[in-house]
Image: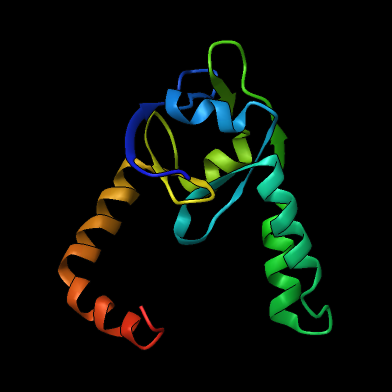
Length: 143
């Protein structure tokens, strides 16, 4: 399970150091792709296969299903952590997420999310302002 919030930097070569506590779960490989809300999603290779299996079940005759599948799968890149515990973020994913130098890595149970520091701060502020409304809406889902 991935949890927590970690401040990190991307070096001049586009490398991001993965928080030490998450490295063992990612040592056999990982997949980095476009996420929703303007962040990147990083999955252990085993969890990613489960995502691919679920996406494959979506009806290709529905436009939204095709669009979502294209969005997630076309952005995906399989990666390995180097000996220093870093991954190299491809330029097209850096550009998508607006990550430059300062980033926030957050644990999201089965995946990590990589956010630009600015986008993460904006998201958090919005959640703090609207947390009561969000909580009420979640009650409709049984949470």
